[in-house]
Length: 159
Image 1 (cartoon, helix red, strand yellow):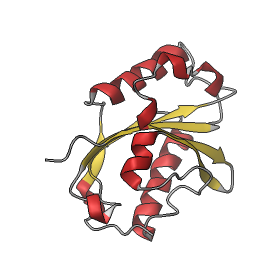
Image 2: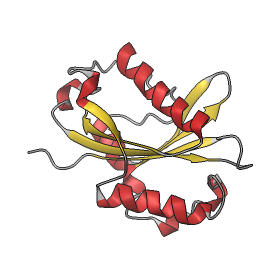
Image 3: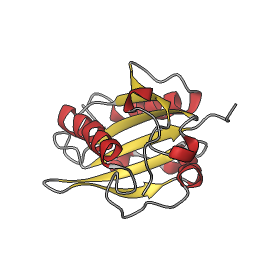
Image 4: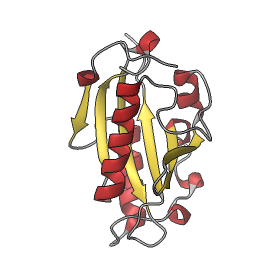
């Protein structure tokens, strides 16, 4: 289990993405949604965002059960140290960090709107000094209920 080495306050919500790739993912999501509240999974074409794929993480939204990891890009796998596909969101984190990721995913699913975060990677003790920026974007097959949350997370080169 990964223990949170620093305070959860080492990360916060931000109003908009600053990282070029995270911003590009959000702009792509915004473009494909058109006039809808959110696009569907079928609207997302991996071939349209090849540079961003290594930073992707997708969560299935399972009503009443929570969130399971659907897909993880190779840069996320490299940072975390394992492929989390099929696992419950937060399953390798200490309870406070796991609770926080569920709260973030809940906010996206219930609010049907993107969320952006940045700060230190508090959930990974060996890398808690590393910066990250992330976005969490809702996807829906009916434009009403969030089925999937498309995330992007970048870890700039360590100082």
